[in-house]
Figure 1 (cartoon, rainbow, N blue to C red):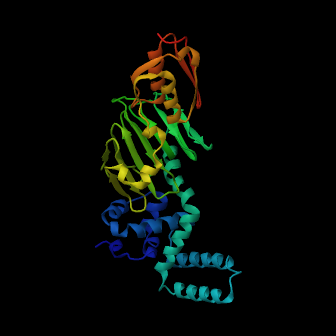
Figure 2: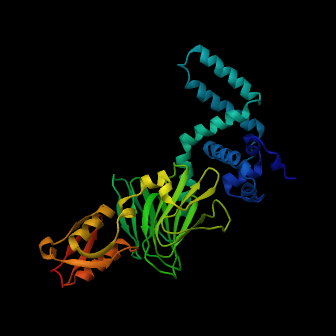
Figure 3: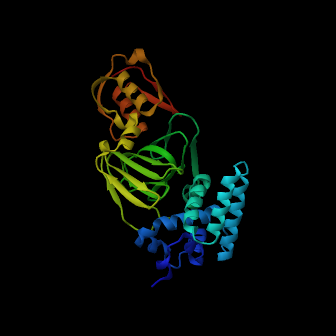
Length: 370
């Protein structure tokens, strides 16, 4: 029987050299990834040990019991220094607990508390470093990074015509031009994607621990580095979601259809498929205009069509109102990226109608309806 099968404490994992190599150097000669997937009951211990190793920035040398003991003593010193203003009675309890912990009897409880403290103070930066940033560093296409530091969504148009509505406090990395037989982008935060159809060139969204694969569809991905879950919600078409290679070598995919969603729980690496999003309060409360508005128009004034697009993407459209005031259109703009929507409307209006995009500002030029 493997020694690790007897591990019941976090310090058991911390003292294991092969575990250190797996977490700190991505060297998995002992099959830790496969073992963790097969032993889900120990997933919490493995995750807590991983967070502590990353937060302590332990080097790749041996981590002996004395090293652990010394590191914990240093941690206690920091904790006690921050508690100097607490009354003597509370300090007495703290010293008693320290002695109790260092004797090894309450080690598990302390590690749990310590892991929570490290999580709150270090997890956001550390986790982003080992997912979003690391994935970007592995890419050799020469990526462009767009960061939304404003308080409203920003529209990003990709070289293939696909569009991304990037939410505040989010960022997207993508190549200037998609080459090869795949289209890959990297998300940290939240974005609504409308993908230009190309069956020969599937589109991949890498977001934290998951990868979403599509051919042509619209969907939302919510993957903030400091939140416990990653969510994918499909509006139109079909997507396939799986773990990225940094988390698991499994090829298992979860297929999502329109109005279905998936919640990936980062804590225990589980996929929860939601077949009826209306029964999930968290999802329904976060649905935006672009996911609710209809883009099916029958004999509708052009002004109303432009207003719907403005509401969906939170953009401004400047157009010659007098020349287009009597124009009505019948068209379907569903399952189309923003640029394709605008092209369809302009072609339908005719008379040399065209558009120009400048960030969240759209300018329509036209001589009127056909």
